[in-house]
Length: 194
Image (cartoon, rainbow, N blue to C red; front, side):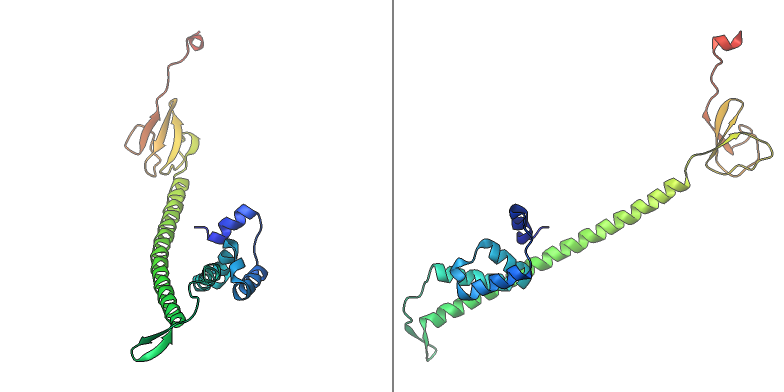
């Protein structure tokens, strides 16, 4: 599965490096309102989802400020500013988001592990099947000779017909069960009888 950065790089035709990451970090700290989606993707790829989420929140706060003047709110006997409340809410939301992303990543990793296991099983199965087919390859030994030993899987010609050897033998094809008729002798052509 491609990352958001890989998708954006495919569109732009440019590969991003750690230098781009450093520039995006600098922009996130100094001028978060100028962060682009590509900057956020670079931060996510090189710095992780937490850093990208933090930069995204900073960009949103810079573009759409929600706190005009800090007001004091009494909470559990302590005075805290409205900005502190907003900050605590943002931290809680970010923590919840991080937990959700971690859960999604666990699910994705489990799916990837299952797929990798299935691919390994298929590769192993395919290799066994190829080895089996190669070991059972057709081997034509020519015209049957009573002095030759024939092994399972070999083919011979005898009396104009082709025979498959079922087990190691020296017997003549058709005399016992060690050979099976594969191709029966055809009739001679009319011109051959003249």
